[in-house]
Image 1 (cartoon, rainbow, N blue to C red):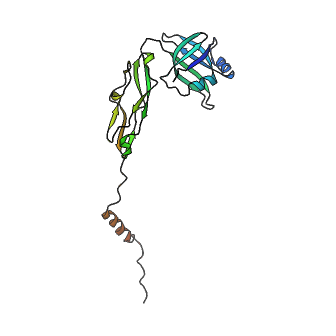
Image 2 (cartoon, helix red, strand yellow):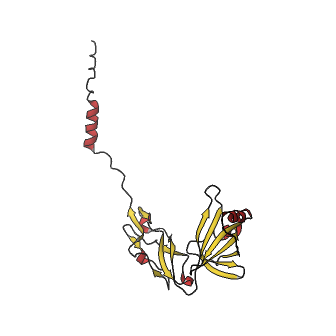
Image 3 (cartoon, rainbow, N blue to C red):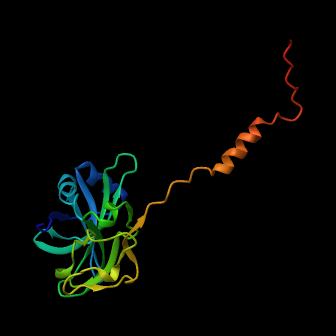
Length: 216
């Protein structure tokens, strides 16, 4: 996938009143945070931003163009209106070329496990891992082939193929996927339990009147 490029404008004003004015004009107030603790106040076209970032992950590096200057950055936080669902504010975090960074990368399971086809149940308790690498080596996501996974087999973080230049930060013993036997349905009542239940049902309840004798 080609890198997402977002056109932005710098803004001098801050505060809630200025943010409302920007939103009324069809744009989104945002802040681009630099690695050295600096920050740049910007705003973006709401429609363009929504369309271009809908399929990116938290580990996707985008380009933010601000009046002739280009920044490589993550979309770290997107605030939305609870009632309307519209985007209220965006935080970007700049990454520096040639400087290693840490990021969380999502895991994408691929394939239908052998164990599932044999009646097992797939469990996938882990959905992302933390890695360290240069920005150019950062994967948007890690595909995990689980097609050969059999019943009572599991795949761990240490088994993942991270790619050259990517160092694992998350614990290698964490389970990414496993196939287990499905829980058996509750067994039918034993024959002696069924007979006992039938005998109990045949005994009159305490205090019940005896059945009337048939007249000759």
